[in-house]
Length: 204
Image 1: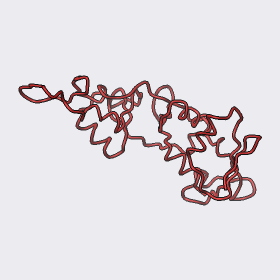
Image 2: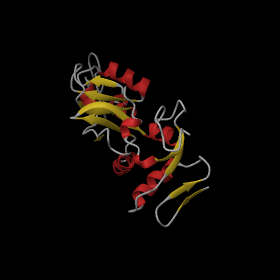
Image 3: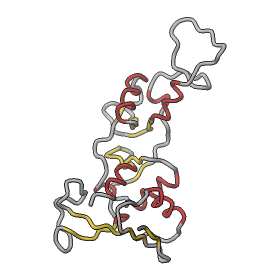
Image 4: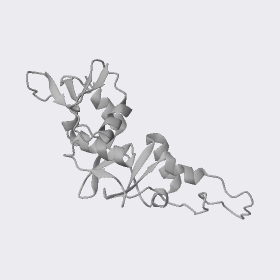
């Protein structure tokens, strides 16, 4: 059973919380949500594995107060912005998204490419198009694509390692995105996705 009290707190007797409710509650209420979960730091899936928690190995932790750095993916998929379309598409097929960095030896993040961005590449050419030679990938507005930088989405939505889960979720909800780059000085050091958030919430 899931309920939202007048003081803005959420309670759930069973782990069947629909994640859309969480985002909806965050955006619909001006009050801070007080979501408390019980975590077992001995669990392999727990972001608090090995940490001494109040009351022993099992304690109550405020879910929305968890810093992003505790749960972020520290090995996000990367591609340099001058990478070829075919190479980029392969990485997106494998990972469902890829972060675009300035150069191969740099971690300065400048964009993101998802499966949706690749729709521009595979969209059909005009019906009355007459082309001689190799047909370059084109979008609906007939722009030619050659590199990852040509199709990436920007600017990148970023948060800092110390950003709380509540702050990150509000940013995701406001901009309707599924992922945030975790960065320091514009250099990507990790990523936070809705999948990571859901996994963290149900890590007990």
